[in-house]
Amino acid sequence: MKRKQFKAESKKLLDLMINSIYTNKEIFLRELISNASDAIDKLNYRALTDKNLKVDRDNFKITISIDKDNRKLVISDNGCGMTEEELETNLGTIAKSGSLDFKNLNKNEKDLNIIGQFGVGFYSAFMVSDEIKVESKSADEDAAHTWISSGADGYSIGASDKDLVGTTITLTIKEDNEDATYSEFLDKNKIKQIIKKYSDYIRYPIMIDDEVINSMVPLWKKNKNEITNEEYQNFYHEKFFDYEDSIKTIHSFVEGKCNYHTLLYIPGHAPFDFYTKEYEKGLELYSNGVLIMDKCADLLPDYFSFVKGLVDSNDLSLNISRELLQQDKQLQLIAKNIEKKIKNELEDMLENDRENYEKFFKAFGMQLKFGIYNNYGINKDTLKDLLIFYSSKNKKMITLKEYVDNLVEGQDKIYYACGETIDKIDLLPQVEKIKDKYDVLYLTDYTDEFTVQALAEYDGKVLVNVCTDNVDVESEEEKENIKRENETYKDLLSEMKEALKNEVEDVKFTNRLKSHPVCLTTEGFVSMEMEKVLSVMPNENKVKAKVIMEINDSHPITEKLKKLKGDELKNYSKILYAQARLIEGLTIENPTEISSLICDIMAK
Ligand code: ADP
Image (cartoon, rainbow, N blue to C red; front, side, top):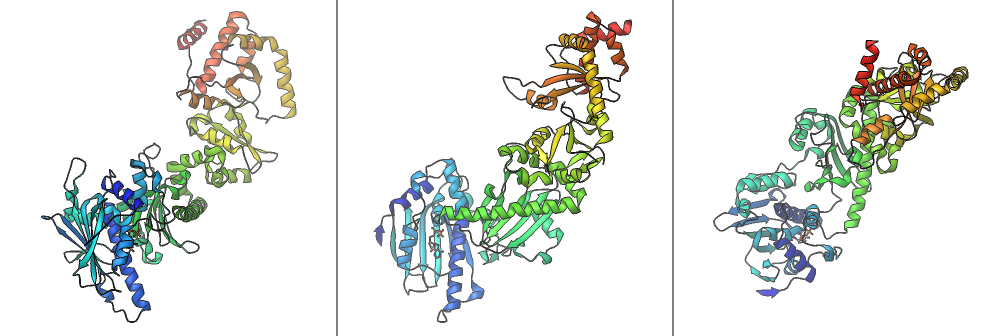
């Protein structure tokens, strides 16, 4: 036997593998099975082009055997095998293309995740083995060879008496220690489980004791019209752990620069942890039927993070030694197409299956809204047509497009109001009058206002909060009248303002209210609803809305007010302001004071 040293960079990776704290040690089996499958592919292909090469196609298989007593796990294939030279170059050197920069690879969990994600092939077997023996006979060479290594200090190559073409890899599984129970890799059921998990769709049979473990044809590679909805849903339940059916199944095969199959599902409800930091988005990523990543986050934009499913492409490599960048580019291309596909399917559902869309929106609408205002609104054009809001006129959810398609004569704005529930918004004083004339969108998610502010306009129509004071719906005459009224009672109003000087910026009469006596409006960027949201955030400096108290000019209380002065006017002002806050769903800071003021009046 000849003793040899590993090339420098191989040594580093080996060291990393042998001392790996990587939790997914089981992936070594996926790697070895993939190699075996590739080797059979190669031989199969060569036999197609070289008539002198005789192969038994029906007998192609990967065989696994376990010898518990001697801690041996054996993976055998009847693929192309390796010559002495190939054993040396393929297994003596890693990163043949030299593209991977091991300088930056350190022994921490994050880097090891990279390993798990891209696959490291053969070397990963050192995570679980004290020694690896490879016996191989190439279709091109009469003699067979043995390659043996116990790790970083090198390997030996010598003769072997293997007589069939192919490769047999014998792992001597490590003893258990505090960190890991390696013995599980000598357990037949565990091995079966790992095969099912990662290699179910390998095209050749994977055998243990004459039993075929893998199913060989993945659902997503079957023809759409051969698959029943029940099959799709069973697969979904099993694979993505949802007890409910998905709302939408998207199955497609894309041909082009990069060929791939996708099978995507839109769930009917949000997972319990969906709106938490714990939730991990991502699609399963397969390379030619072999699972290479559980949750490939790069395949989904954040705003579609609810989508479950998988991508399988023959154009992606498991191989870490390939250009990672190039791989990234392909992934990016797939991700772009997937995004478009999901968007189209959602639009289609919105158009043709509104009931289901509303169900979808209830579960995940918030995520789309985040998507609109995240990253400075960069994605708002992608997402704006997927939004639906409750409409006061239609008494159901409508899109922004549906809103602007039905503007009334002279209307050039989109009106909305915010509050906790549809019912509460419907009762807001500012909404009461304007909704007779215009459709008003009712926004009930706490993030809605941020979303609307990020949008700013739709189809050239500005979005206007009816609870802020820049709503301009009165006629010129009405405007004149109220201006005069405010002028006439200037002194009265400033006395009221003085009584509320820490609470409001201004007090004025309005003709925008119908039956309510009073309301609060805001000036500037921060609205009452936003103040509510922002005030529960752990912030040192509380953000305050610039509040204006508006009094209904045609309400009987106004006549009364005009006759009051001094303390009485002051007390009435305080009660009115407290009322306005309560209507807005805000708390009052001085409930006992207000309560006794009311009692005083009642007792009179
Ligand atoms: P890769 O990601 O390229 O498969 P590996 O380290 O797993 O990297 O394997 C290196 C090379 O060794 C493979 O590209 C292949 O040429 C060869 N090889 C590995 N396993 C086998 C096998 N079972 N039969 C034939 N060749 C193999």
